[in-house]
Structures are given as C-alpha cells and as structure tokens.
Length: 371
Image (cartoon, rainbow, N blue to C red; front, side, top):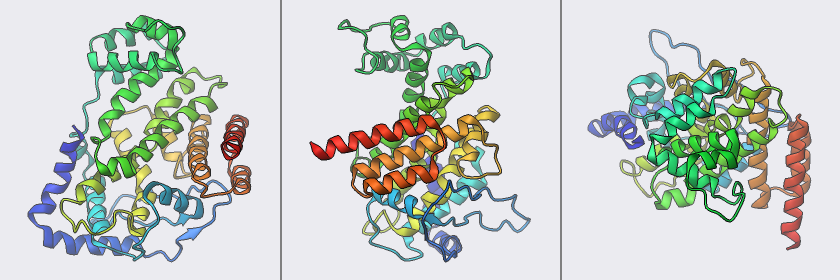
C-alpha cells in the first residue's frame, strides 16, 4: 500500500525532527529564491525542471519554477487561495525535505509503492507490441478478482452500457467497451491504490486532483481518436491519467505532514503550491522510469515540462488535454470569464480535436449559465 512509502519517507524525520527542520528550512529558502512568481502564459510553457546530475557535494535538488497566472489560478482552485504568502513555512519546508529525499533515493522508496499487478504489466507489454492482444489481457484479468470487478463495473456505467441487461462477465464487458474501455478499466482500478481513504483532506483537496486526472485521461483519448498510431490511441488514456500522479503523491505527503507539523499551518501556502508546481511532473517521471514504462511514455511525460524532450503527437495531445481540463474547472468555478477562456485556448491549443473539446466546454458553460 502507498502508506508504506510515506512511512519510509517520514520515519527518519520523526526520529531527528529538530535537525531535519533546520536542513529542510534551508532547502525551502533555496526553492523560493526566484523573484518571478506570477507570469501570464501566452504559449505552452516548457521550462526545464529536470536538474542535471548532482556534484560530489550534492547540492539541493529543490529548484523553484515560476508560476504562471494560469497555473496559480488552477492551484488556487485545487487548494483554495493562499492565506500564508511567505517564502517559507514549516509545513512546506517539511514537504520539500521529503520531495528531495524521494528524488535522491527513488528505488528504495518506490519499492513501497502499490505492487503493479500482472494485468497492468501485460497491458504495458501489449501497448508496445504491433498488435494489441485483447485475449491475453482478458486471461490475466480473469485471475485478478478485484481488477475484474472494476472492469465489469465500468462496463455497466452509463457511458458503456449497451442495453438494460447487466454485464456480468469480462467477455461481454469487452464487447461493450472495446479495447480502449478495457485499458481504462485496468488503469483506473490500479490507480485507485494511490488515492487515500475518504477523509476530510481527500474531500477538500484530493478528490479535485483525481477528477482532474480522470478528465485529462478522457480528453487525451479523445484528442488521439483519429491518430493513425494504434499504440498512441491505446496509450492516450493511460498516460493522461498518470500525468498528474505527482500531484497526488505531493498531496499524500501533505496529508502525512499534518502528523508532524503544527496542524494550524494552512495546507495551501504559496510555498507549498510552488513545490506542487515545480515537482509534480518530475515525481511522475521518476515513478514511470522506475516502473520501466516504454521510452515513448517517458518522452511524453518529460515533454509536459521540458522542450528538451521530443514533441510527439501523444505528448502534445496529453499537454493540451491537461490544459483543457484545467480551463474547464476554472470556467466552471467562474475563476475565469468566457473571454479569458477563449483567449487562452487561442494562445495554447494547436490541435483541431482540442478546439472541438474547447467548443464543447464553451457551449456547456453557456447552457449552465442560462440554466
């Protein structure tokens, strides 16, 4: 269970808390040295946060990345407006210390992540093959009752259900959903292991991250539906869903931090949002590499933050799908107005399919306002 990785992260801190407080404070002070905080994005921002190999002195890996106006507004949507706007605070210092430890020693810590079941490893193998072997995947899922139950549940959802008759077996589920639906069922079932129980922090913050992740996955699939690459079509939902995995991990660190830091400190300080902004994709990349996901998937994840990585059709689709999902929630919350929504779409989107999604969001928002 993911809880074990948190225990591995935090146990050294608890045993020597005062010493770590001093060191983590200096780390966080380095992380907020940049003067630029809010810069309005006029094009896809791809400044690199992938730090070169450390020297013999192992300098801090925590390097701040400027927050664009759009990113700042979306982080406010996720966590609420920051009451604490100082450059450093005990809560954020604590989380920064854990992020650095995770980046420096990923293998020891990531071994404690939820075990990837055979259905997921089989899925990843099939995504790399020339022909997607559905039968091979179905046979593996049959041996995993929990996974099978989740896939059948998805087949009975309003989106996939084809008749009044309930789906009760995997073969029928596949006939209803197709290979894309099967991919969704497998990935969703596994990724649920990264979500905590239904606690107050999950209801206030974590559920928003999860819903954004699922919507990014759905938009990614939609943006790639006309792709000539079968591999990209099959991978779109999977990569779209794990794109924001780093945000979920930092959220988990935040929840755990309440056990060790003054609980009166708000969990939405500006310093904490900077950490989320700078390190969520890097943590996703670290985990994807540890899982030995295909190089094509690593390239897509890397491209979400750095133009050093190749801009593949899938990479651009996931980038624009994530941006569309963020715009959707900002518009829904009336954080931005319709004209701002239109302008940001024109500034950032490049794919015709992305504009189709944007137009649908726009029309739905108009209907909501009328209603």
